[in-house]
Image 1 (cartoon, one colour):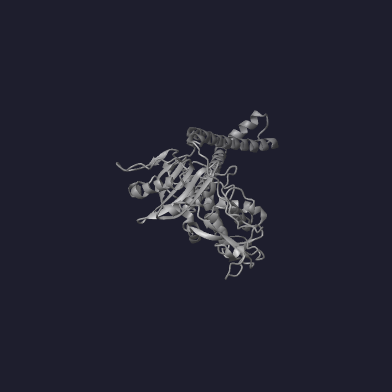
Image 2 (cartoon, one colour):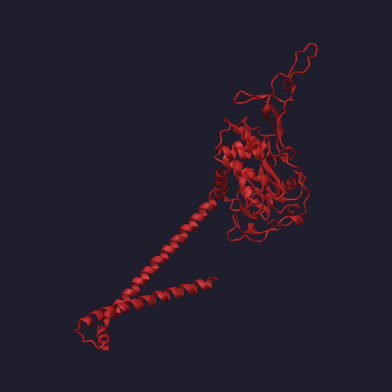
Length: 442
């Protein structure tokens, strides 16, 4: 029997969850160091709205954020820096890293390890060729974990790709993110936040290739090779016999190796794209640990808003996100910012400046210590020179005559001891004062 065309494996329907089964984020973010501003350290709902402006709709998410993508202003949020599992929204970061590194027109052979990916997959056929562009279609449209692993392997392997993802997250200012799996499947220690997802969405939307792959609704995707034409259907009077593959409605493509391949239709997983006018990008996700996660971007009437969600328990696909976007378009222009999305490199530059300032302060303190030591030594020498008879009195106390050679040595040692004693005393006083100063800060 001829093998049928490969089919994309869909994510199993998420099971119903209650809010009681989701994590309650603790207030662990210091407002003084919260990326984007101190108000974003809150683990509750935060807004700054004029009187009479309606609050955002009730969202069944552990965390969410609404920001103006044109200005970077964060307009409303709930626990934006809570560290939670990102699920497939992490593929946005994966694509930011890999799009510049992998040639979209070059063909690559799938490996058996790629095809063994768990969860959602496109159905890569080991040994068959796929272009870089087709793999990105699978990654962003179909949320395919096998495509994420194959792209990572092409990039030098999963560990190398994860290292680049984490370095990129740091450069973007996404300090709540630690990538442990390029597909976004749950991994020990893996985390992100609603704020970080907004940074990823902001960065990705500046990449033309990302926007192109991310917003395509349907594309034909290559599957198994077309079976040999040995098995033909019985000829209809007046028509030539045709093979089963040739009679299929799905188009046939020829890959870089000259192999004729069956195709199937790949449809975008982002249902907001089909149902919410103005949608220009986004990525959804789901795992048992993460529950519903979402990045969505829409533009209407000259305004562009990004919405991110994590730990969602409302599984009405695109509808919860649409309610939050509706609020943004209706009331975003009048909402006062509660923070902002930082620019790439801004947090790293601020950290470097802070480290440089600390090093300069330490160097200045060391120079002050050296100057104090020199001053104490000078004072001790001056006191010894001002009272030369003090040395003779110490010699006499030891029962030595002033002209005795031992007396000369004793005089020198005594003067040195006096200098040392005065110097140590001065340093001790300075250190004691420093300890008192440090204790007062606690």
